[in-house]
Image (tube, rainbow, N blue to C red; front, side, top):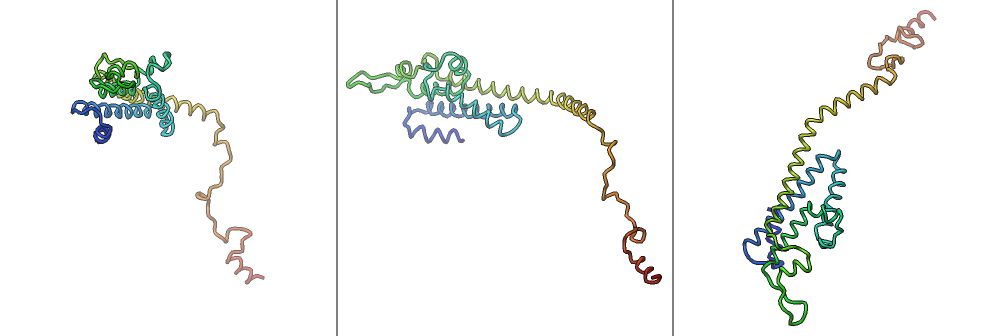
Amino acid sequence: MMSMASSSITYYMVKFRSGISHYIYACLDLICSIAVVESCMMMIASVVPNFMMGIIVGAGYLGIMMMTAGFFRLLPELPKIFWRYPVSYVNHGAWALQGAYKNDMIGLEFDSLEREGPKLKGEVILTTILGINPDHSKWWDLVAVIAILLSYRLLFFAILKFRERASPIFRTLYAKRTLEHLKKRPSFRKMPPFPSKRHHVQHSLSSQEGLNSPIQQRQQQINP
């Protein structure tokens, strides 16, 4: 509902291509992108030890994905080593953005940058300016996003199963290490017992020496 509401508002405000198929593709593209981000954070949360570490690692990872998606620098301008290959190819944002460009530009004509110049086709703008190859369909870009989504889900499932099976082993090793560490420490049994108010034996005032009990006061009055 959130994706469809956002697409319904922004798609027609920006005046993208009319047609139900283009609108449906924009909704599916946004839905799959949000699902990929949620799956990515689920996978990271299953690995990190606490909430704060999950936010730090997740924000850093998603920041790298945004930098290589084509928002800040075009894909052909990215450094070939590591950033272009393989990071941009495993980045859902790059595939989603390419599909969105194709959905909005292929089949349209735009005014030329020069006065009275020929019209520019959307395919030419994709190839020359944005550096996107229009040979494969936009639906293949959406399939790539869905494949990345399924990969994150499978990784999340595998991590949970691994932790479920490995948790007893790690607990056993931790317990053995703790017992070995306690054996090296001095035993508390050899130390003198600590006084305890809970188990302290209570004596009557008459039997305690040095206390001015009522019985002692009476005896002092009789035998001064």
